[in-house]
Amino acid sequence: MKKRVRIFLIAAAALFALLFIGRLAYLLFASPAGQGPLGGFGIQGNYVQDSSSLARKNYASAKVLIAGPASGAQLLEQKYERVANLSSASDAFDQDSAAAYGLAASAQALVQSENSYGLAGRRSLTLSFGVTPEQFEPFVEGLKLLGSLESVTVVKTDKTADYKELEARRLSLEKTRDGLRALKAPGASLADLIALETKILDIEGQIQELGVSLGDYAEGNSFCTVNFSLAETRPESLWPRIAGALFGALEWSLLAFLGMALAALLGLGVALLASLAVDKALAYMKKT
Image (cartoon, rainbow, N blue to C red; front, side):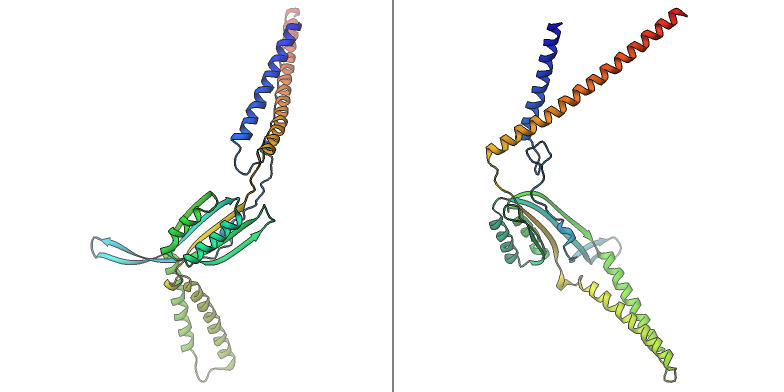
């Protein structure tokens, strides 16, 4: 009996040691970015806001040559939206943020949105730039070199159909306005003239709104969007990281070991109850 108990204790200790060593190695060497050393329950120090929600809409134009079998090659103007989203972390926050503004100045990029928040050691900076299509790729490549790049996405969306739809709506409204103006008659009643003028003014307002939207597509306003987020990180010393990893591994291993022991006890209990039920059923069948 004592030998069985000794074997059981040695097996339990070996299982706990394996759990502890495996978790400790994971926390020290394979902990994902943004997790704390306490087994994945740490709070991320820097909250990086989604910069895409802050950026204004920028559109660019490009001449596209399309070859047709019947009419030959045609030069078409494409309207498109191109957006780059970059996220970086830096332990030299002041230098990298200043470098981002320097890159914007050299590329003649417009700072269209800026959001800076957080205390020293946990600061974050979110910037949205309007960049000309010619400077888009060099500017993005320059931002990639700042800090430690965590993510980058570049999306290009064709907006030619949207542009043509806006133009068609404006032409339709202009025709309606001109038609209403032609209805003005010298002998019309004052109430009819007021109603007609009110309708014309309403259409004029819609035409002006469409003009503003179409102005974003003009070649003079041809820009691409670059959203850049920079989060400050503090260099972590070795001993606090090891101590945190030890504590986190011990806490996780105890919880995992107790969970496994409880599951084993429940399994043994269910098996014992099933065995007793089978024995009673067999005894009852022998009696009958």
